[in-house]
Image (cartoon, rainbow, N blue to C red; front, side):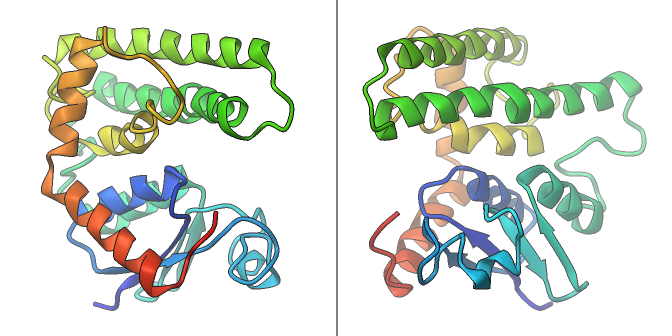
Length: 226
């Protein structure tokens, strides 16, 4: 099997979701790291825009099928359809309709609500050129509201996974975004079930492998800026 080519960014969370899927499915892949801007290795460079017209990562090239995908949900759904035939990370053919809906709704919650709130919080804490306390406060409150929602769900599973039944692609969607809570300057100490879930995810061997591999690729590819 030829290695898949994952296009990512060394700090952005969405490519990490895909890596966690790839690692759990034991699929060979190579990571190509891009940087912000339209210069060399830039996400807005002509070279990358041929891969993804939207100039965002992740994007995934599969030389085994000839399929090119981008947007994290589309990439992950592709990987699950093609390579997770035993449904180790997603609802199987015998799953109930409620189990399928639960999978979809929690994935959608991350992609449409939790992730965007985190992104806005990060922007106003770290990058906005003009200090905007109101925006920081608003998006901080929205992030914590989302943590409230997630905490209630994790309590139902004893903090073992977001969905009953164990680790799934839903956990892969959430992990890299929630990993950024210190960067976003969010106090999540009161969320005991989240802390338990997060500790268990961080302890997975796939996560350590991803961190080590990404650090090595960043050095080998000469990535020194965002």
